[in-house]
Image 1 (tube, rainbow, N blue to C red):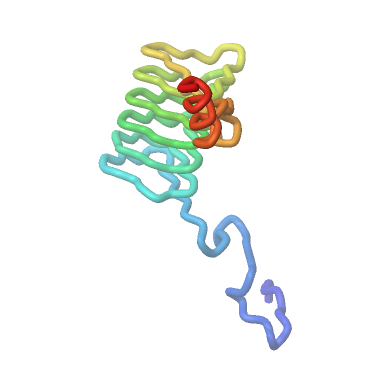
Image 2: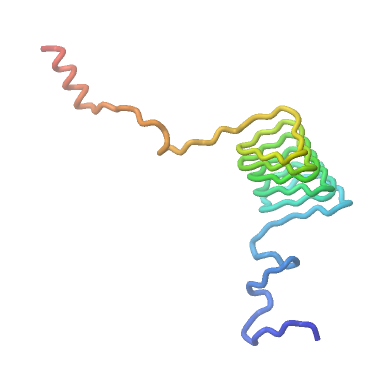
Length: 156
């Protein structure tokens, strides 16, 4: 009655993406409000915490909702904090602390954005960007032939 009709040659699992059916290959974890979790999360593309968690986490993107409370060892590319986060935190990209967000502990980040009202406390350290080999200053090198010529001219 309320179903969308698909052409006969279409499979309902082919390429349909919505809130309840994420794209194939995406690894998203949501810890809902009122849920308490202890443990470890690895190899997740995105983790959203609206509940309480005491975990070791390694993810590409981390979102701490306004009701979220995260403690533990955190390693992520980007973090968006609306709630509370405490522990050993390493953000290789951008750490964004929203108006009601609070970050504490040992914090390492490459880029930092704090909205008015956001709080950060603890041991704070900026991660230096890793320079590409092509960006490194070039040293003058002398060829083996040049050094041999210099040696020969000194012996004459």
